[in-house]
Image (cartoon, rainbow, N blue to C red):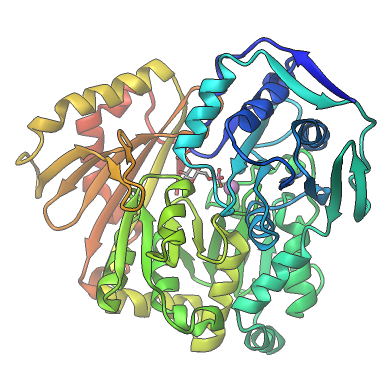
Length: 542
Ligand code: VG1
Ligand code: CO
């Protein structure tokens, strides 16, 4: 029986960089999740009788919201919902399922790298029929709707068993519980040379993956241990847990430090990788060499033809604005298109759909390609293993050869987390006000060439996205970028991105923070970070 329930709107359901993210107790308020899900459906047209994909990263509250979403999808007229067993679907796997089965769209329940648990974070995002995150036009419509919504529709029925594969009915709708791993693993096997990677691992090359008790565990076990023959236990923290075992599933040098230290130890593995909560991001570490995500994108693009799925070459590269220009040099050499977009994967969708870009990346440990419409952590890890197998070189050798050929883009991001929101906004406003006066100014040997607030003009649909980050560009290609995070749930997070291009190979061995020290000092001077935020140092440096 379909019930129409009266509800009162909330005013804070504005999707950020990647969906709506709030603390679990916020989501547990009366009708909070229901309102947002109904606002999604109310912002879509023509889904009657069509298929919706639902899954999440397994965090606390995942199962409860899946039950709600299923009953609401049935009440709103979807014909079928495909759900990952146990409510599990990594973000890239959800994207693939939407595409493979021609679904109308999907709901992914995740707050990605944000911690999980009863007092931690939860999130809901909507993906469209191409498998990618909803573009701003739709997220804006959802937000607008959420502010005035007064009813939602739900079917009255007992909870469904999410743990048994198979079909059942919910009102007029079919619910199909699917294996969350198989389709995705098959896709990976179709893109990469599993034979060569299996041989590499068989020859004694030791690979470990830290799934950080988040969603990639089942995927990594199936692919690495079962299909590629790595010894049992090569995937660490492989079981998705509602609180991620208190891990902070953000794959970087701070939160995946144990893995990093292990790979760097003399007896440790040759290659290590970690993923985030929902499996769309990755960190790659080789013995003696941490790979920055910006370099990872550049190396994957430069070596793409090593992988069977990309043997024909790539059409173009896209990167988010704060991501280093390392990939630009590859695009230039290959004579292919290079696109610079705002932060967030939703901006790559049009370029991928139009065939303008084949590989995309963000400095925040996200890399992906046209195989899905999300960033894809395990895809990047497998691409690296494929390149290592094909080139018969270590990660360190591959990176050093890349720098020697293209030059090195020293790169670091400094995050100031949970700073006072008003102070963070004031800092950005003050920077914005200074922009016209900056060009021509010198700080030591650095001269500012230009400064702006990045605006993106989508070349496919003509949409314009403004205020996407303040850029200060110096002569010679160095730059500092400032923006506020759109994924946090308490206070504001200021991100400062620092980059220097160094063509001279004799200087490629410099420690990163030392190589960027003068730029970091200029960032402080211009933005007055210390006095405005009260912070002496960043919370996280990656
Ligand atoms: C961060 C990253 C951005 C990424 C986004 C979602 O956004 O900087 O590159 O696309 O997270 O990734 P922000 O607005 O906090 O800087 V995920 O893995 O959380 O879906
Ligand atoms: Co993520």
